[in-house]
Image 1 (cartoon, rainbow, N blue to C red):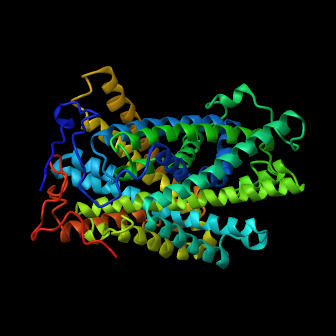
Image 2: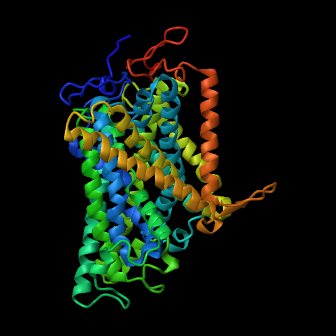
Image 3: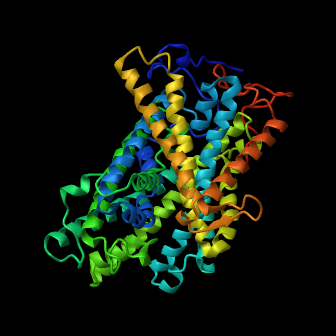
Length: 543
């Protein structure tokens, strides 16, 4: 067993050029990704087109003409948290990210429990969103080929079938290797960003030349006052929705062990990705709001008939019905489809690597650490993520006519805030003895990531409070026994997911206690400490 010293918490300032810790060897393909590929994976993971298509209506309902500035405000905790990811990755580039960092940082007693909760936050958020991604992919696949009757019904059995096949295909790509996944992402993201840019430019040109539809709006300075005409509760809710559309850039850090210069490149890519996303969201939201207006009919953003499909409706209006307009409209449909594909793939990637790291350190069954000899990918972790996603997607598709899928997406906010916020606060605690050594350390290792963590955990609390009310969810559940509470579906999904996590953690602690005793992952060790008979750092590879 080799050991290295994790010195940051004891007062020594770690050097980026001389990292203080190397993660346990897991069998991943080192040096496969550069800065550009890692940044592409980070941006693609957020699925900008899918996120805008699924969220813009709800943001416009709450924030109205202030939607673009709300996107800027939601960017702030994302940027602050990404700084925390960057600082922690400098000293510990482990693909377990939040799970690993929190476990090491908070000591042998509390660390394993806190770290496990952070790992479960990543897994739960990713699993909950998969059904929605598959559903969108299924719908847009039919819309792309003008099968509007099927594509317009998200709960259709045909949409379900295509969605399942979609998950299978994306799981296979992740199974085949990180380089194939990254190259696939480049192609998908290229289509996505090009079409979003073209759509925004054409919308602004039509607005400026007087060819925008009735109800369009001219941009005004009042749009950029986030507190004008929005209630405090509406403001927080809109920011929470925007936090969801930024979620995913941390995939850059989840593939850190497969990245060149793993101590520097992943964190840098994560920070760069947040700025790219800010630019995309601000421009597209401003263009859509100006061109379509906030009417409840036609292409207006408040037309409830288009609440789950804003972009395809806008595309048809913006590009027109001439042959070239139809081509561009179909390219827009392809863009949303490719966005869902990219996000499906990059949802599987970080989850598989989180469970890989958790398995290597024995916080979950070690079978999840099994690797493919040729592709150097986590086989069991990758396949399990796809299989569990399908197993949940099928019943969710039929529960309440598929509306529970929409609630599952909203439920992600709690787990996103949980592990993002935990990472920011972990950064502060890890570097707590270094904060007074320089102004740079005080801000980059303490104040900024700590502020991001506090903001996100405050959002977590607000989210639970807000979604307790049935009126804020698609579905609801009334307890058939005392005290007969009537709760929103989002709140119920969150609580059930938390309970499942607690049960799984308790079972693992009872059957394999070494991790929870602080033996397999702590401040001083980077490799496994044997429990009973000696075990290798990773289980035997797959075929």
